[in-house]
Length: 324
Ligand code: AHG
Ligand code: MN
Ligand code: MN
Image 1: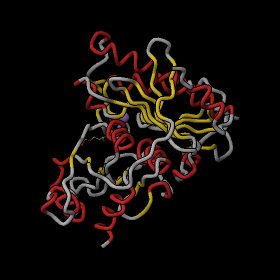
Image 2: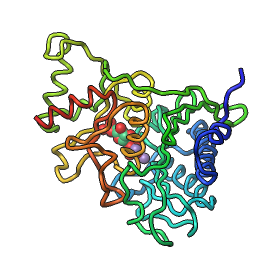
Image 3: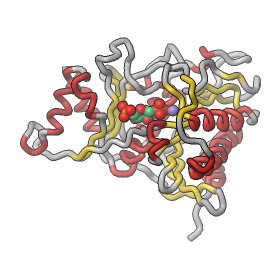
């Protein structure tokens, strides 16, 4: 069976040649990252890097390796005006006449690295919005402005999931040839959910509306929802969102009273916005308790946000618990 390869797909999508170079560059470097991940302990790349990132989180060696690989790959592309990464304190200026800004989470789900479980790379492409050289201000655009977004899931197979604003498609990496081949042409999230995804160990720290929403899901057939729900938590947003794109459900990472001044754990520009672009393009919804995430005007590249995403009806219901 002959399958459509990523370059062919991008040719046929309404994507500028410059954006094609960015997406192909990300695809190529992700295949290289997957090879490094596959070597694991043999290449001495597991464990801590011994440093903290700008967000005060301990970096793993692979956070740093993946960040450097993606940074180098993107900086080599004339179309890239600048980049911002979860692992970089400041934005990185690249080519003064580049058309695009790229933000990324080089290695999502870092806590899974040392247990040989699923991790990913998340990326978002924004139009450039200022004079050269690039400043942080240029990146502070609502998620609605994204020209493309996606992720790579490093799982039993390596998959690239992408939207250029015309639906969501999935590619699988052919390890023999190194090319990404189209394996799902039209991703749609069912409007009703049967499954939810949340780190339950934080339950006592959530706000009251999230406590009662989840309590009602857990009470199943005997509760107000009159329906049993299944629960899954991979602890890598890429893998949890991938499941939702494949078979539906709701994912949330809520605000937590242990860090009352921090909006949530997940980052708006490296995690929530790109995933939000995919989820909306697949017919789902992504909200904070008080509005749609893609409409948020960012005020800081590293800002965080509470996230509720997935099946449209279930997200609406969860938001309703917060707004009642
Ligand atoms: P990262 O590894 O990029 O810091 O992101 C981890 C995030 C996200 O991927 C995941 O949903 C969540 O943190 C896992 O959080 P818990 O440790 O609370 O499970
Ligand atoms: Mn992450
Ligand atoms: Mn990360």
